[in-house]
Every structure is written in C-alpha cells, then in structure tokens.
Length: 484
Ligand SMILES: Cc1cc2nc3c(=O)[nH]c(=O)nc-3n(C[C@H](O)[C@H](O)[C@H](O)COP(=O)(O)OP(=O)(O)OC[C@H]3O[C@@H](n4cnc5c(N)ncnc54)[C@H](O)[C@@H]3O)c2cc1C
Image (cartoon, helix red, strand yellow):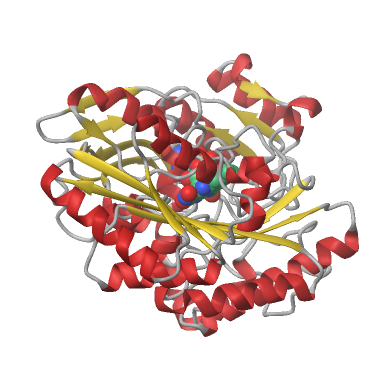
C-alpha cells in the first residue's frame, strides 16, 4: 500500500457515499470494534461503516481503495481468532445491517440471505416449512451467516451434517477492487472451479460476501437426546470412539468437563448437571421415528459399557433444551471465572481423544492455568479453554505458551490447528506447523488472484514471522502488525 491520505478526507468520502449515520468515527464508538471474541488481540479501526446494500459495500470499498486504506469485513465479532480486526489503521465494513432473508424456496430446499442474518434466525424463519439450517455454532444466537461463511463454521451437529461449506450453494461477493461477482448456483452444481469452496473459510481475505444461498434440511421426524454422566473426561472420550466404531451416526456428541460443569451450574445457564461428575457427554440421534429409538438404546448401552455412571434420556423438549443449555451456555458461564477467556480450537483424530485430553490438561496444570474443556468430541474438535486475566503479563505469557504447546501436541497427533474459529491473527504464525512454504505460496497465489493489492483484511491467515514467536506478545507483533 502506498502512503495514506489524511483521515478526514476519507471520513468525508465515506459519509458521502453511504450517509453520515452509517459511519462511526468517534473514539468511544471505535472502542467497541477493537477486538472480536479474542480479547487480547486488538487494533483500533480508523472508521466503521455500516452498509445496508451491496451497492453501498461497493461504494465503501471503492472509497477505501481511492484513499489506499485497507478494509475488513465484519459480522457480529464473535470470531475467536482475531479475524475481524482492522489492522494498519483500516476501515471495518460491518455487514450486520444487511440482515434480510431475501427468498425461501421450500420445494428446492434453499434460502437466499444477506450476510448479516443471524444464524439462529434463519432456522426460526424456515421452521414453518418443516426445514432448518444445519450448521449451528454455539454462538448461533449472535453470529452471522457472513461470518459463518468466512470461518467455515461448524457446531455440535457438524458430526452428522457437515460444516458450512457443505451448505453453501452460491455467493455474491464484492471483490477487493469493487467489482461484484456471483459464484456457484442454487442447484449446487457449479461449472468450472469450485470458487464457492475457495471463498468459504477464506476468513474475509478474498472479498466481502454480500449474499449467500444456503441449503436447508428437513427437520428430522424424531430426535433423542441423551446425557451420559462419566467419572472422568477420558472415559467419556472412549465412549465417543466406541459409539462411532459401532457404525452409529449420531447427530451430535459433545463433552463438557467437570470445571465447565461447575462454572455452568454457578451461572444463569445452570442446567442441573451433577457437579461431582468428571464429565458429561451429550449424545443426540435424529432421523426416522422407527430407527432413532433403536439407535438411542444402542448408544445408551455403549456409553454404560464404556464406564458411564448413568445415562439420562431427555423425556421431553424441555429436558432436551436443559441438556443443551449447559453446552451452549458454557462459554458465557466461563465469563464468571476470569476477565478473559482463551478458546483453543484444534482438531485431532478422534481415536486419539483420550490421550490428547490427558496431555492437554497436563499442559494447563504445568503452567498453573485454569483450563477447562467443552468440545465437539464427535469431530475430534477440541476447545481447551483457559480463563485468565490479560492485565497479568505473566499469566498472559503462560496462556500463550500453553496454547502453542497444545497446538503442537495436536499437530504431532495428526491433527490441524483450527476446527472452526479460523486462523486470524491468533494462529497465523503457526500455519508452518501444518503447511510447507510451497503450500503457503500456493494459497497466497489464490489470494492474489482475488486481491492483488492485498487490501482486503490484510495481516490475517498467513505467517508474518518464521517461528520466532515467543511468549511476549510484542515479540509476536500483536501491537505492530506488518501486512503480509
Ligand atoms: C461463545 C462462542 C461460541 C462459539 N461456538 C462456535 C462453534 O460452535 N462453531 C464455530 O464454528 N464457531 C464458533 N464460535 C466462533 C464464531 O462464532 C464463528 O467463527 C462465527 O462464524 C463468526 O461469525 P461473526 O458473524 O461473529 O463473524 P466475525 O467475528 O465478525 O468475523 C469473522 C471472520 O469473518 C469475516 N467476515 C465477516 N463477515 C464477512 C462477510 N460478509 N464477508 C466476508 N468475510 C466476512 C471477518 O473478516 C473475520 O475474518 C463461537 C464463538 C463464541 C464467542
């Protein structure tokens, strides 16, 4: 990027193209946008723009380019890897006001939505047609479909239904040069390269998604939800392996460990879980009525055989929601434990879950940290969560050390460094753990095909250092981030 124009002329230009009420520039307004859910990574944007239409996004992008200022798409800011930060004094383009469901086609089972539609709102809106939108991040009451597309988000039901990429049929994208393209088709059969697949999971680095066509799924005839109560997290992990090996395909299998149970039970999300349990395993089966009853019985028997003290079967919808409240409220409940929460997001082969969980807890203990686990066990997608206070520099350094050790451990076990929260600024320097320089160069070429000047969400995804990271945040460049 070349030299910047002065900020006031950029601000004036932004007000000009979208209207003054859609541009935030006051310090107290910008504070809100300094971080996403990963609070110890922060960068103050130069301005925040709130467009309502694709045309407005185009005008904002063109204004930023004219002033040679980078820009960053943002949804609800629930990302947990620093993906929506405006580095290099950039402009945030927040799509939350683009929140209309444009079209629902129940017969062909798809919906066309704007990127700011909140994930849970889509399922509510199509319920009347007997349909739902399957990817269900635990943040689904807040996160947006634009953010889900950018992060290829998953959720508890990813085990059976797949991640966002399995549910996006077509996209409208404002390219970093301001041109608008449409990728894919509502039938799900694009000709040529799978460019929808390239954009899903690209973390806002290939352009700004302004419309999404998503696949809808029929609501299953019957759903059974079971709560296995285990003496420890390792036996719960073993039960997950046994259930999958038996040939069953549960819709969801989620583990909540003892520390998380304690936090949940002390919070507004209290669900009546036994606080003396080592872990609980939520198991959900869905499908045709005749099949689900038998599958639930087999699941229950397998969990008991692997050491569950007890398996409760939800008697009604209210009890089902109670089980899920514990899982989905877990992150919120941890807010009681400390001012900050670091949510790790690595994936390991499922068969290695028991040993990895033990090793992860040992890392937390060795660094004297409050580490708890609540995770998508069926997918092997771990979320070791560390509660801490970022104002304590020593504690922050230990959190970062532990986080790095956990990532290495997972990669050495054959896993990857992110399941669903993305790489962002948090893990960009760890990309070398899983990708060679040639791999990264190939990815950069793809990126350059969309964004040759690297103006759209720079400083994310790609390493900025060659494994020189240390526990000191400054050594990792969190305060002064070079672009690419
Ligand atoms: C309590 C909690 C629980 C969570 N549970 C899960 C979970 O179960 N599964 C899961 O996958 N994630 C989970 N997350 C992470 C997060 O909610 C998801 O990554 C979500 O998809 C982010 O959506 P958002 O709208 O908040 O996006 P943001 O945080 O605003 O942005 C995330 C990324 O998307 C890009 N982006 C946003 N909008 C657009 C757009 N229109 N076009 C292009 N790029 C865009 C941004 O630049 C950024 O890189 C959780 C987060 C929290 C706080």
